[in-house]
View (tube, each protein chain N blue to C red):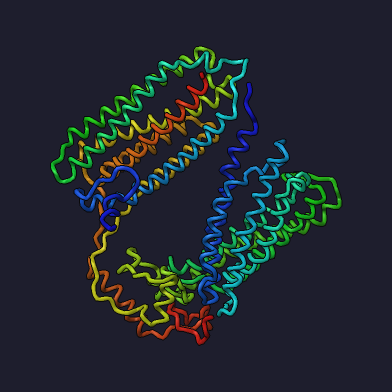
Length: 213
Length: 415
């Protein structure tokens, strides 16, 4: 029983016993971050609720005129792939930094690949926003568009924050090595990044697919 | 086009209503401490108080719509939220009865916190009952945005939150600064708050029922004048109560030598924080206390084991102090201020500054102070030895200069 508790200290991917005390230290900070993430979930819930109460009106452009499902599919692909690569980064951290050698290069590679995919997502999303504004659908045009821009934009803002955070971690790892502080930061960042993926799946199905189909 | 003005008000109160419980639940915790500490008894019905707190926490998310019953949603929606609102009175009532039962047969001292608690019992209950009245959508159509509402929410926030905070300051002040606040002045302050509150806000129930709206700058009805004069006198007394707090702190600082409580347990406390000297050393506990029951410190005092010598001390690792959090707080305030007043340069500068500060902090080496076991031992052993040799005071001398923060058992049976 005590073994199984030690093995997994918090929801998500644990460091494992190879990391010794570092593994045990992870519980409070990662669990605390989960609580924080759940408060963020409430915020997204509010934005979704507001979006659900607004209707595209005949006066203004709606989903059919504004959404480019091809581009949205690309964004989804980028973000899902980046979730996979971030998972690879955490697996690298768990397995290769747990006393059996320290392959920092591999960790940095997965992290930078994640950043690249995140940037790809952001590039397509911002292009879509510009196109929407050009097609007569800026956020000021209708209640529906305000809600749409706020919800999708809030997610985009989170992705931007996640990218900056990841770059800081990469720089930190290169400067100071994979020490306890960066390990804990990586675990928390991973929770954040997967969370954004989950939110995006809701936005994709609810906002874009729901709007068009 | 096609927006909905009700969105904002819904969003605001979805946050705003749970927020008032974020205010009052910690104050309820203080009330629990007062009831048990100042009657020398275990808290009655601990489990039911915890369950009631959890009920309130959940229900607080289900009542936001009662802030705008008159906004035009259907009667069914109003009724559902009205019922949910009234339900909150049940767990709150459970807590009140638990606190009352805690006092029963205890060694009650009528100190400043107990005055606040008694004022809370009566006044908060009245405020809660007027809340149940407002929770009825039918009545709310009459009372909405009237002075009755103003009376109601001040009636729960002042005797609830404010009394809790003020009593809490009185209780834990010696733990932080090492000396008590003047008991006589604190009692006067407590009475000023209670009397000032009653005079200032009770008349507003009446003026509200007479039709006076809230946020009124001028009125013509002469019938309102006597009530408003009483209310004005009450607000002057509340002003005196404010000054009285400052005076209490000022006079207490001047007399701090007489009010010192170096042993750290001035109120015969029951919970762990009183098991340390006052002011508390930076490491809090020299050795982590082993907790085997609720009220572990009271239990140890009863068994006479509270100040037994400890054999083994270890080095204590303390995180180094840092001012980075404070800088980020200032910048976050700048961000909020800038956004509210549309000062975009301030908002952008504060946001970037806060992020940059956090990033810089992430790259700084994290220092730890190690306090050697010998130093901890010296200070902790001296405290324990003096406590074992000292006689302490019974509750009769709680408010005298003889109270040095060491409690002697009273000869009363603990029911």
